[in-house]
Image (tube, rainbow over all chains, first blue to last red; front, side, top):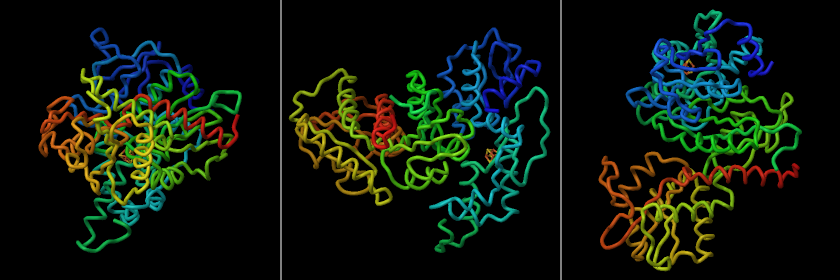
Amino acid sequence: MKPTAFLNDWLLRTPPPWKIGQILIQPGFTLCHQGDQNSSETLRPIPLEKITDLIKTTANGNFRPLRSSPDLPSGWILTPLSLEELLLALRLFYPSAIAHWSAWSQQTLRITPYQETAERQTGMYHCTRLLTSEQRTALTQSVCAQECMKKRLWEPADPFTSSPQEIPLLCAEPCNYFIPKAREVVKSMIPPKKTMGGC
Amino acid sequence: MISSSTSKPALLIVGHGSTVNADSSTPTYDHAWTLRKSNHFSEVHECFWKEEPNFHQCLGQIEAETIYIVPNFISSGYFTEQVIPRELELEGPITERNDQTFYYCEPVGLHESMTEVLLHRAQEVVASSGKTVRDPQNTCLFIFGHGTNLNENSTKIIEHQVERIRSRNLYGECQFAYMEEPPLVKDWKTLTHKPEVVAVPFFIADGLHSFIDIPVLLGLTEEGQPLQTKNPHHIEGRDLWYANAIGTEPLIADLILAQIKKFNETHRIS
Ligand code: SF4
């Protein structure tokens, strides 16, 4: 089943309201920040096009390089949305989330281990393959656990059980925010003046 | 115009993005919105090297059978020739996999119509200042690039575009200059003696280079200071108009369509 059909099917058989990341989905469809669920009267209606501005910065104006970081600004509402618009909105807020969840539920999600992603890197990221498993675990604790709401499916994986009314944010592969951090760790291990593995 | 199958194809625009700069992905998102409204495609997606969804993870979101992939890059090189094919698992210009066909088009910057986009931007930066150039034949149009050996192709494209603009005789002079190799942007005052100068940075987004580094090299602001003055900048008796990065030009959405048309013609897809 493709992501649109999968989402539609799930919405039909799951009682509302629904949740994904920091967002609340209500029938209609209406989207708002979960922190705003009791103040819908005062929320600023925004068109779909504004999502791309909204996702880029925190309420303080700081850049959000990770779309799944737990600092999505609040105060807005999107309504009414068709199923296609809902899917597009969710794709912009949480890229790949619906597709990953749909594939994971149908046991077709490809999970890519760290080493495979690192082996694929070329150029300045070539050296990320030298990250040890201890360093990798430490990095998942300092980066993923601190800055990201996704549940990691690659090792070391996060304990994860899906809850009935919530669409999970799943991480199927080390992201391009994680890989440069891995490079920094590897680089810090290399004595100055030596180059290793393209670092 | 676009599809070979009965249902509409999908479009995937591939951008660079950034882990530090919020403006880097803006043009790719903007062109995607424009093309969503065009009704040519059943779905319009974007993916980024440095942001989400990344190249490798984005494909699972696309439901159409036919997918056009257009890199929103100003030139071919490491990304378009190595990284994008590798991450999207492309086998060449046409890849068939699991009931889907992927058409990998050339990057937007390579299309011949980029000349029109550059001329439009040059015209528009002057018009939006509420002024006009007094005499186009006494005006120099500069195209600025980064210019390192890292991506030799981008300098080739800039020089090719400058040749094309020169052949039209719309401006008294058209020149290229680079941040990091001669002819240098910082030498613009001696590279041209024309009293009026229009400069267009050949970058895909308004990032550090076009927003901060080049204005410093032009002498419009000091290191670490944002650009305060407006177009035209009056410098030593001359007027200088400095445009936003070419990639932010809305006409780039048309170049994306033009690259798809060119792909269809080249590969005889009707
Ligand atoms: S690797 Fe996955 S879990 Fe870790 S920060 Fe990136 S997206 Fe989040």
